[in-house]
Image (cartoon, rainbow, N blue to C red):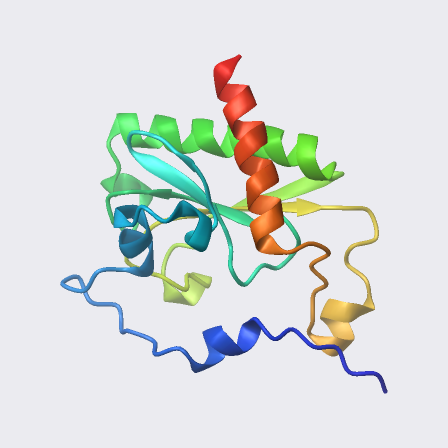
Length: 168
């Protein structure tokens, strides 16, 4: 049997996990406050939300759109936040289409721990590009996904595509 290596996963596995605690800043709040978009793979920032590549993706190009303000569900968002969140999802899909040419998308929100939310206290929308045949034996048998390009390179391409979309 061949072994496949995903060395970036060990950082996630070994990293300390903070319990969901309203007084504790979420990872998304920390990234929102940072000015190092390259290090955090942030591809776009708006007035009320931002988009970033998932550091531990299900597929190449897997990104998330996150409101700056930590709320656990849609009902906590203002109309302005909700509108910008969905517009950014739409823009990210367009940028992913341009840069990666997927055949489709999974777009979803996991609300609550039992629904699969990894950061329960901070709502975020996943945008996962999909290609015909990408659900092959790797995720099923090896519990491994193949990400064909470094996150830093994908992020740079998406930043450029999103800047062009917003400019014109």
